[in-house]
Length: 150
Image (cartoon, rainbow, N blue to C red):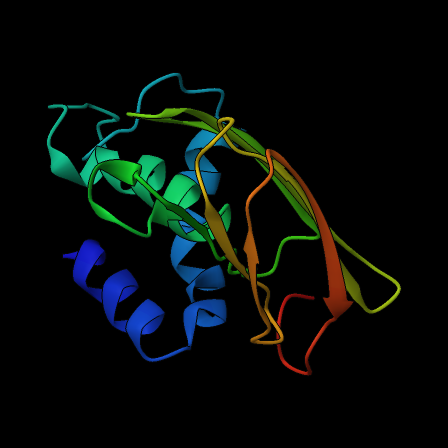
């Protein structure tokens, strides 16, 4: 049911509160596990949907890559920091890979991204500013709003 909690916090603009919810998965990383467990007592995995939550959340919310139009004909990048100082990754889409790296430093949020050539993108920064871009390489920054990130 964690999926619904994460979705509710994302929809209400409170995604930063997910920081504590990541603890079970962070604990498993600290144990050196290579697959998510469903039962932390016996450390057994049945590979159910619960284990897919971090994969979806990291790509769609932490990095912020989602379709702006069906089939990723346009791409939306709207990262939601939740206690991290930086994040980076590559998200595969039907149109090609989307690369995102962002960091928080000295009260500023800075984003670098690359979208497939010819695919329009909309970037929404944590301060709410919206940027429509029509080129592959993107570099944007904004002051970090109070209460967002660390």
